[in-house]
Length: 250
Image (cartoon, rainbow, N blue to C red; front, side, top):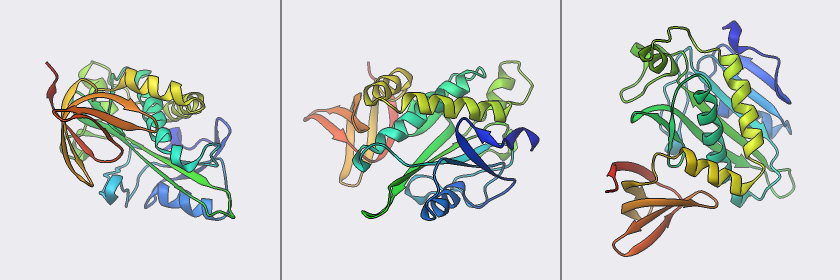
């Protein structure tokens, strides 16, 4: 696709593929060679994966990318980069008229349907410079027939609003990376922006965690990305889990 093969995006070199198994896998491979500041970009993935190694449908027409860089923050702060990527993606898709919101911690929803997801990975041993890969998948110009159940795309949402043109993915990825670089420099800014765009806060939720199920009201997010849920026993901070929205808090 000629709208998705730029030579550079902001300060990042771009490695473009018409088709690849996984942009995150390729970015990790590049990280192992000492590479930095590279955006791996693809029109289609054949083996995309999300959180908990779940299959991620990645048909042609989507925006599938992984940003490799060397972090300037401790590894323990890495979950904040997932929040930053969610904020950046939300801001980018809103520039094309799609009013998405963030479901904790890393999904973008439109009217309850999944539009995009984020998978952040990090590595590097003590003797080697740490690296971070932020993988972002957006159902951009994906046809309705190619979408999995419960998903939507920028094309579908825009069509429902009377806009028939496909999204310029080149322009979209540039805006997304620009927003990511702008917001990720400040922890407080990340958290404030995430709260602003969140659809999870104010919901009665059920969260499946490694230590059991937590049910309560989602009231806040705290560094480095923990969801704060108010239960009958008090407030609980959840660092990892699958979140289900049950209903808005009355």
